[in-house]
Image (tube, rainbow, N blue to C red):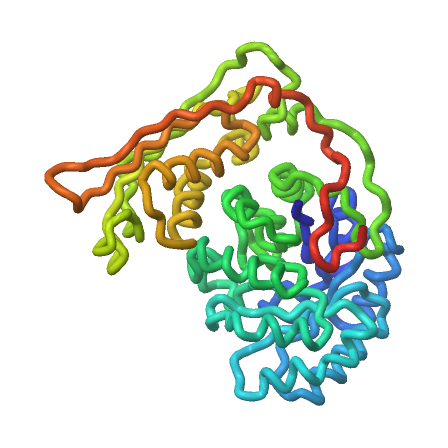
Length: 392
């Protein structure tokens, strides 16, 4: 499950974010990419939140000077925040900076931030774990230079999330994220998704946050019932409109479905049972049809649809993992991953190898979700197994 982080500029925005269901309140100067607010503003935000939610704060856009970074982080820790996000910019002293932060990591939960547009270095993740960091976040340093997925493919982002989890760290994703990115990134099971621009009117990150915009983002992230440091117990209310939009429908009859499809999607894939097929990737064509539960009202925004990006991203993630011997095996994996989404009732997957002979050769399978799973899921379900570094 995944927590929603809302970046705010002060106490007033923090209150709006809390009222709309944000899990973590993140203090940041929205006028710059990774700017820190004034100490007085940060203290006022911490006081206003009053332990109702955990509070995080950025250390600011600092040079990679180990002593300076450690001193600033220690000062931020004195404000009573729960998490400090430290930007780790490309520099020959970056390893020394991480090591220098170890004493601070014993006082407060540190989140090391790697920047996708500067080339997030996967090798730093084990060093963060050794230095006592609580987590790693993949973000973008230049907020006018594109979204996270403009700089990194979904498979690479997934690999970084998996590496963080393997090292016992929380994994967070941010970087000018928009509402349509959310279903795609939830495939990767990050612990945190962070937002600023998507929470503001007209997607202007320097504008005040909007309750309506926050509500759209909140509705796309199934609330997480795990305990997070400093958070009060969430309300147990149920909004059946949001349940229907997510496909958690109380109807157990033959509900109407819509068909979402992907046609002629071609990727290079390491596939085949012959030895010569292991030497290089070959082009494979995918056609997928997913029958998804229809919402109980006409589609109004991203909350009401099942995105075709989820299908293409599922395929990208699977083919990036390892050599696959059989097209049947590949089709089964794709179908199984797509059927993990509660709205999907039936999926047809056609996989064709395009370089074996004239035309295409392959397989088509149809798989169905058991009807009994179409039932009500409460907005705040029983907590699942906690991820690393998340309090149980």
